[in-house]
Image (cartoon, rainbow, N blue to C red; front, side, top):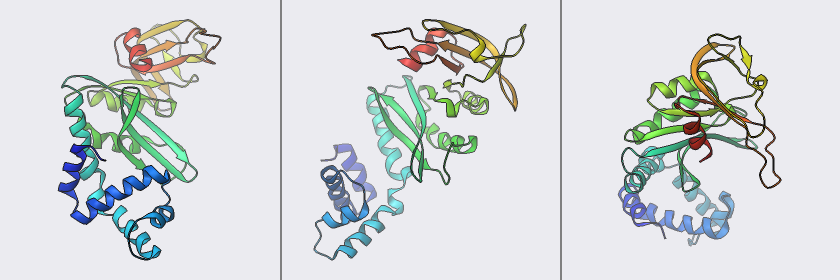
Length: 258
C-alpha cells in the first residue's frame, strides 16, 4: 500500500486506470523483485494476451504524466516540508553508477543513513560525467532546497574546481573528495601535491584559503585532510582530502563522515 500522500498526489496526476495500473505494478515489483518488462507483463493480472499487456506497460511507463518534474518533485517537496524544518542542515550527495550500458547520474538527500533520490539522469555515454551534466542535474533540484542549509558531498569524480566554484556561487556548502595527485598552493609556499603533505594514519590537517589547481588553473578553497587511525584491526588504505568551503576541519569532517 502506498503512503497516503503518495495516493493523494498520484490520483491528482493520473487517471483512474493509470492509478490502478501503477498500484498493481508496485505490488508486482515487490513480489517479483525484477524490473524486466517481459517478466512484469507475464504476471500482470489483466485478461488480455501477453503482447497486449507488454505494450500497455510500455505505453504507461513512457507516459509524460510520469515525468520526474510532475510526479517525483511534488512527493519530495512534501517529504521535505513534513520531516525537515526550514533552515535545517541537509547533506546532498552526487553520485554516478554504471551497470553495463546503463550510466546513471543521481543527486540524493541523506536521511537516517539512507540516500533518497532527488533527481537523476541517464547519461548517453559510458564513464564519468562532465561539468555540464552535473550542473544541469543540480539546477533542477535547487528550487527544492531554497529554505535549507545544504552541504554537497561528492566522491573523486566530482572534485573539479569548476563544479565546486559553481556550487558555492549557488550558496551551497561543499565537501568534495579530492584525488591524491591534485595540487595546492599556499601563499608563501611552492605548489605541492596532496600526497606529498605527509598525511599519516591518525593525522588531520586543514589548509584555509589555498589555491587548488588542475590543468585549467587555480581557485581558492579550504582543504581538509584526514586519515582515520586503525580501529578494530582495520586500517584504511589511504587518507581523505576534501575540497570544502566549510570554515573548520571539524565542520568538514563532521559533514563528510557524520
